[in-house]
Length: 214
Image 1: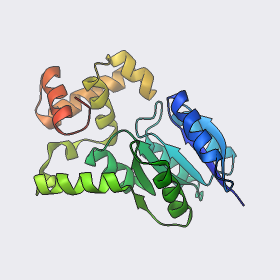
Image 2: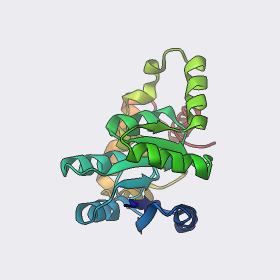
Image 3: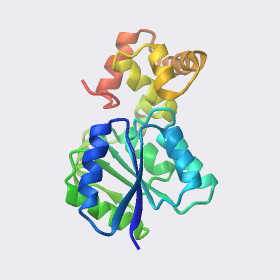
């Protein structure tokens, strides 16, 4: 029996390339593709999905919320995050929420297939590049628990990333499926937690902590 896979990523060209690569394996079937979290949750509720391969920055529903949705339905669906982000906060947040695997998009196709096999067999998987990155970060910062970024919720981290990328509050609300007032609330709480009062300083913090790219 083939492994039923759902691809969840905002970028169509990336999904198409991933689908073609997985199609070369006779025991893996991409049964659906979606560009946002709401559609992913709907499909998982109505279709038998073994593995969801998802970008950490998924519009309209966070990966943490998607994993919570899967768990609430007591489904056997397992989640592999395949993301451009190597931030330890995103990795820790996803894995603690219940993701079964995490790979960066620089990983090889062979490693992704290895991850799918491992996760489908009930194991967890962390890609080799990411393991080295986290070890390097641990050595550079012996006490990662002291980082102010750990005070932030997953949603606040998402809002912070969009702010660092130059998005307006309206654009952030659209991307995350939130009301404008909710975005403002996340922003104000985040700035209070960090003791930061200027957007430029928020951007600098996000880049320094690896939450957003320089």
